[in-house]
Length: 124
Image (cartoon, rainbow, N blue to C red):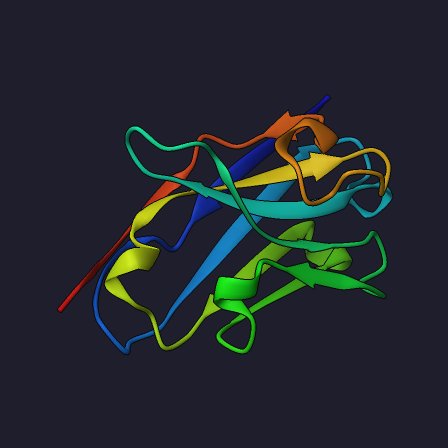
């Protein structure tokens, strides 16, 4: 079992930055690929970014490429999502997730454990 806790959300003006953190407890963090998803009311959960267990590969949805960076520190059991040049359409609840395998990292069903999420609000 892995427990995931996100932090770092909040309110920011358009063009600003936030860094989300996801701290894992339980089984060995470095065994898992990690992903970030976001969701707004009435919409499906959307893939944002993913990183393999050793950080060797990263993946992003097109709308955040060049603005967001996913990273991890296995010594600290923590994954990060650095978000720059934020737009109002980035407003959502952001959740981190852990995957036992690298299959399907771009889809919610590829993940085995989820955090509760943290709200990100971007205003004009």
